Image 1 (cartoon, one colour):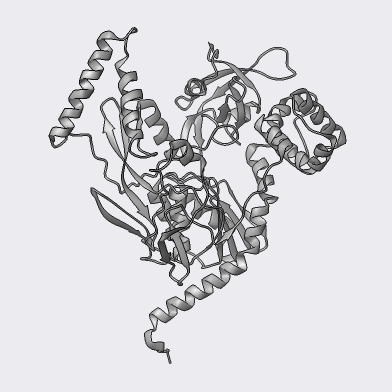
Image 2 (cartoon, one colour):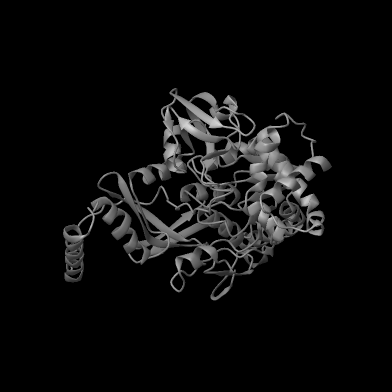
Length: 527
């Protein structure tokens, strides 16, 4: 499984609803224009096949060339999946797979272990972050192709993978015999008390088990004790729409609209809270950023439009296109945009993509309000559409300085980890922090890897460097999950979210008052 977080760009998951019909590719209506275009394509392909200097692979020409090229003229999210990529996508939505349970990447053109998942077969075997994979089941790894290695590591439950790695400080390769097992990829890995009465929960994606995981996490916390909830949807790329609906349903009233969609050939469909009111009604703050997309925007928009939560952070990504799967011969699939998503107030979630390149579309997030798409929440607040979900309160991460960008951009914290544990035991106390000697060693390591900085710059960032170093080393000493917990407990945006809970309570009280007035029109009172 390749790394979606620390070294590779964000990949937006397609929002697919279980309620969306799965059509098949059939014949067109036989319009003259379409037939003429197909005839032209056949002529061009025939000329290429007959005259190109090298032998032409039809699958490459059509599936990797013609079809993707055609889809790029439509929108940024319509896509063609060959059988392998389609299987991987469905696997990601299932919430589990069978394998050894670790994330791999190739940040320096070598396939390395980014980290094993806590409790997985690879974790139990003792495989560490930074281990360079050189062989799997006698097949030598000669290319930095993570998809090939990922395929070798996965397999039926109970089968064996013999993994050979090179580890810093160990002269000979190490061999690990790992028995493949089910690897759950939970979407709710973090739910804990920030302080008495204030709970925190992070949803990392919306897969087939997300709503059940949310129920389980809140039950474990004892939801009756929650006086305020911080719901973290930052960098949540989306996923399954019906799971987003199920999660929003938990916090809304029965019958409230969660999202709707319609398109040229798709009638309007509204998704409402089927059950609603499935727990105590406490103030909520939802954390979002530019990596919050698709199904995560549906939840954010619904909670905002119904004045159920304060939204804190940056403008979300703005991915509000509905894709439906069209099966293709050979077990591939076409994911074609058939409609657009709208929040309960009628705001368009999708941002503009017609007047910019795909690069600009994926890299830009200026957060402009679309004055032409102005709507009102249930309580009368003004909200805007057409550019993702705009937060009620803004929060921006501090900009990195030059030294910080160098250290993170070159993955020096990650690659220092194996160097450190080659000289130190992999066991630590959770109170451990790097001392002056370790910071000086890391400073020398950074200098040796052509990092430019002045003594003043280093001293200015010293505390920041110590914190990042501790977080990285904790991945090996404990687990990635434990390291992430450390990061979250010291996250300034989460603290800002706690500060925003009184505003969320005032919003919730006003919403209750509005609903009470609607229940008793004309000022009538019970006697």
